[in-house]
Length: 292
Image (tube, rainbow, N blue to C red; front, side, top):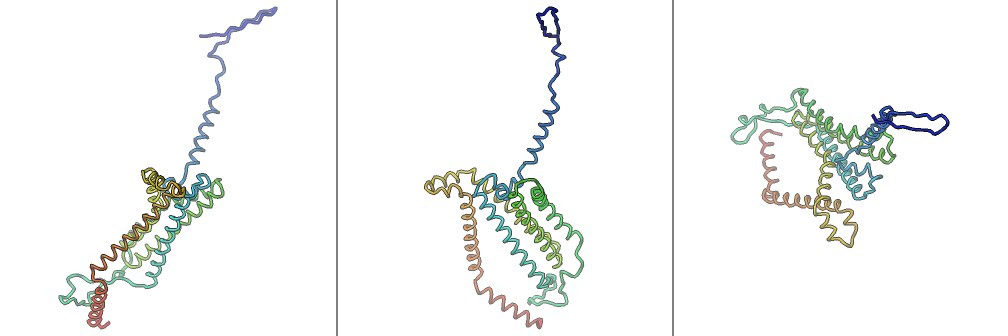
């Protein structure tokens, strides 16, 4: 055992020996508590929507990236526009109060006529409970994480800008949930549980657009496309800052042009306006047969 010997030269010389093992040890409890509190704070400061373009809007006051902010606003407006279209379409279908009427394959006559006594209505009974449960589960599970993240930011001690941005993102999630529920009701009211499930999945695809755009932006920023844009636009710094935004808008325009080309090709191969004449003649023949 190591010892420290101290000698004071006075009239009465006193020699003391102190064991090193008996020296007071530093208190590690306070250090451990501080480290734990620091880890808790770091966990609380973890970014919400770290895989979505919504984070560009919420954390703009920290990042100060106008390019990402414009991308986030663009995607938010696109989602709200698509939800509005779906909402108006569902409301119009509900107001029309029309359901499908089917007939068996063997009940059709050889000349194409229809025996009206064999027609069956698809909404002739009460919907099954699982037809309503499945869409509700899909919507709640997929939209729940965004709702919780927004509420945790709104009722936190974050900056006022973050809370207002979270409220904007919260409106997108609520609109998606209400639109999905409306389309579920439309499918069930129509008499088809399958339509209710498919309609809710379509709304969830729109709700997932922000995450898909985020993945595309990360791919573009990490690829050679960004360096190529910077080389091509040496004089214009806007291309350097808004390269991902320009590429996204350009790709949307290209897809829209391709859609028009495909529709024109399909329309021309189907005979164009001749298809309308065929449909009209079939409708007149059916009306003459049934008397309606």
